Image 1 (cartoon, rainbow, N blue to C red):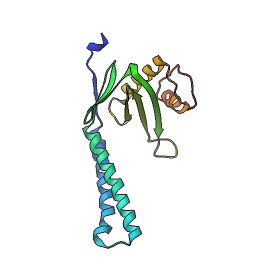
Image 2 (cartoon, helix red, strand yellow; image 1 turned 135 degrees about the horizontal axis):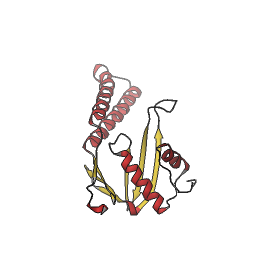
Image 3 (cartoon, rainbow, N blue to C red; image 1 turned 45 degrees about the vertical axis):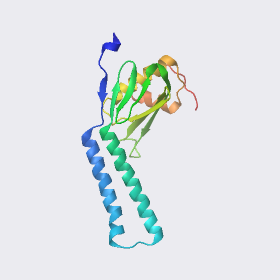
Image 4 (cartoon, rainbow, N blue to C red; image 1 turned 135 degrees about the vertical axis):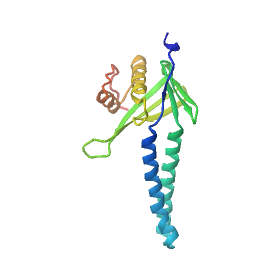
Length: 171
């Protein structure tokens, strides 16, 4: 029976997170240096503090990803560390898949998956080990429930090799 199969544990790749952490730390260091060396004029101080806050937010987000653990099974997707949220596939009400590229050519990008259901929302991206499994299960649940999907989501599912029988709906 499907319920007897152990859930797949999914985590973010630690090597990628360390590289992201290094980039965030460099950003903090570069922005902090003028604050310690000189007394910037008020508008520049505001700009530097804003940039500092953005880099610190980025570092906190990396920390949350480093601690994050997801479990995917035939019944549900659960975010089990450091927070606890779950969406049963039967309760899925929204699937949204977006592709973001770092280059004009569309290469070197990542996918971002947003799932809603049972009063919860879980967001993961393609840097998560096991992302493909989550995407396949979510798409199967959306197809089974005949959830309306926007054209961008359908195109991104197709680009990922997943064909759905769900009609395109302009949202």
